[in-house]
Length: 369
Image (tube, rainbow, N blue to C red):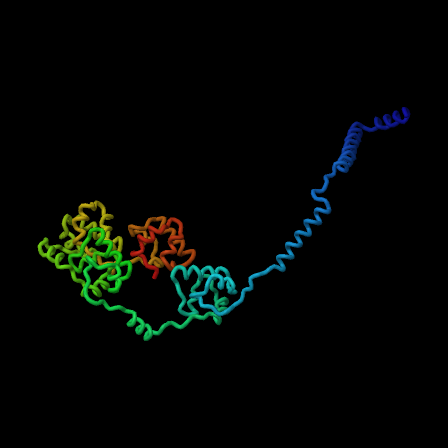
């Protein structure tokens, strides 16, 4: 053995130094590879699942897929329907894209309606190809003709009978005269808050009661004799219609000089017209004492208000109105660019930075036409 070792040693030393280093490195690498192979075989990881567990999982997965394939599905089909009255459950069964179904419900909820088949083409997302497929199934009853409408209107229309005193008439009596619930309620509310009607023209002070409605009921107004007597012995009351008055008319009011008259007209032009006497309190420098002094002398004709056509208005037109700010205007313009014209003012409440209070405030000054 010693001879063999000496022979290997002498043979190894017979190589140059560089060869010997190479042999040593190669030997070390071979030992590492052999040792690593043995280690890996002894420490090979066990499978996470046994074969039985894997087969069970595979069977469960196949059962789920089979159930989905054989499970019940909603059968969609085309059938005769009226887009003005069809319910959501029936609409779900109609073979239409989901986007069009949602838009139809939203359009109806906003107060829209369909008078003819072609009206459905204005729904957002309704393409010509889809409309051609559903057109034969659209069933919209024929509208009442003009002759029929006039007949129905004559039957339903109530003509005022006798006279009424706005200082004592109930809400129902006022509605029987042809006023709507909003107008009748405002007349009674004004009376309940301490106001009174000394002459028929005082009704023009009521918010929501325009000159056309006033002309229809004024012949039937009869103020109580006691109130008439008070009017005779009181100072002559100057009446000014706020939306048509110029500076010479306004300075006739108690406490209003040329400066405040100019401010009132300037603010009226920004608004597009006053819809309530209380808006005078929004004029710069206007006090409650001044308002109380002139309130009995003010009338407002809301029919003269010039509303903003919101679907056509640009940034400059809206931002100059006192009730709009930059956030409101940008939100409304973005909504029009994204989803098209605004069908109903109530839809604005769904927008960011727009709330119900703002919508009610701008309602007299905005139209979607």
